Image (cartoon, rainbow over all chains, first blue to last red; front, side):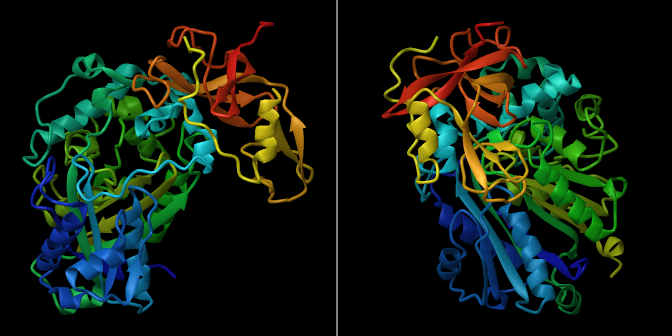
Length: 386
Length: 141
């Protein structure tokens, strides 16, 4: 069974404020974006029968909002969790388990208001086999393969830096982006080293914010249309490789990216050449490079030059990370929600840095340090054939 | 260069399935597992083979020889590493095949000194009441 075009995103919203928001808790960010997304869908909370969330429990979110859901999804596999929530919602809706699923994200990543404490477990595989060597958060783990990639494929420091430069060009046109000033490769390489070969400007922001989505059946989206055009779910994928970055099968490619995207392309019945707009989770500058190659947009070893030559920048053939990405727009911790938000905006023609004629958008999420992946291929009605 | 004070670095806490491994490191032995069904060596310790799922697996002492597969150099100190920044966090590939995260000791922690695929050999460093495998440039090369 395929879930192609059987459901649609009919509501989407981010919290009113993103960036530095020290006066709102993580839970309220789930709730505020939920209220805005439900309103965006032209619905009320009483229409919602399913709730999905990561970071905080969907039950905590549902009760806070006053919903007693009959479908819950607490899938928590890092920043791509929300893409998996959409996939699972599409399947659940197609199977008749529920009709309107609310998916929420809220994270006080910067201000740490109402956030669960970070706990290190010395008995976990990470605690036994990675933490003793001085890992300290994603910058000391996620880029582990970059030097290997550089050796294998000749990626240069300048090409890696150009990822941040390209995305800053998009952010210049996005008022909500945290960083908008123009950036040069020299600026990136002059920023301080965080974890060689990664400089500060090749690492994502750490921000506060939230977002929510409302997913319903294609039938309902068409019979009870809301104020916005539905964004149809054409293809979905999810995959997991390893909880330990040190155990990646190949440090120059993400197995989870490959598996997840292959599933989504097969379900949607499209290929990379059909994608008009691309979002690739950019916790660090090397992720779009891995993403472009692992999803088949370019050949192995070609992504660094492809980005440096401007093909993903404004005016390029493959607009990528058009909100400015985690490097310039916002990155709350589990950034995947913002990938989907930007895909939806582009397909609705309401993005700040709008790309002309977007009919199919692909969002590629990552969870953990190449631990998991989620892929969504989304499209307008014409692309969905409905 | 690494100091001799490793007390404040994060220490692993063995589980029943990893105890034999951590007993080995205390004795100066790097123990890995090998599957009797498919013949492949693997790491991290667990009672079933990740390649073929067999539970017919055995322990062996690894040669301790490895190559530097990939690394990064952290400029932010983890607990216990304050005196060592910047320090490399590396993944080495053992001669037997498996890879593991580790630190590289006895060498400048710079991109110029740390050359991918360089030959390494195991050494051991205390972490709390445990001992963890670290790697240094191989003495016979």
